[in-house]
Length: 317
Image: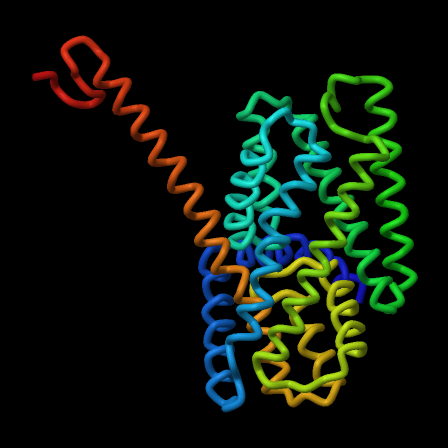
């Protein structure tokens, strides 16, 4: 028995690494997206009462929350010195990359990268994004409590420990190395504004859930639906793929407890999972394409200004 345990202990790290590599591969993410789209199309085709209008109406405030309130919160906390428009564009780009990465991790990496390219040190860039994430998580907690959903004790304990550790590290770092947190706004005013913006964004997500349920023709009690929304947000603490995360699974299960059939519940959860792809591709992809086009034109203009008008990589006339 001891030999078996030893073999499993040695094999576990390799298995975990292989599983992580598979989960991070583009093929796995593409397969999850294809399955989610196919499930949504199949379930919607079986719902004669389905109507896209409620979802479209609910999508407008959600898009405003995601692509306006969230970047404004980041702008209020990061203290980068960049304009609000810069933060809005960068946030849109990060959302597209987040959709393409497990756990939405690519979004944070891109935001740190863009801050660093804008002249912000790596430590302040990481601190600004981390503070934005922390305030966003606090907004989720406030929204969940507002729905009447009790947060599990272990979740509250872990969240409290993490928040205390982050704040203690930030205070210690600011005291010993002030330049490491240069510009990051660890003051009550910006944090309160960030919390208000986070709660507004959570309200837009709740509206999106209501719109998805109405779109598939599921009559439910609004108060109980709010509780299901709160429970799904708690499940969202666990990471997952865009389109197949624990939050969407918990939403589908919760909808069945309200009396909806599995077909209707899965259709509503699939709509909530798929809708973020459209604005991410349109806004984030459009911003990335515009930046690439601008850089290409600038490089061409620099080549035209060279003696003889020769462009890089080509022979002059």
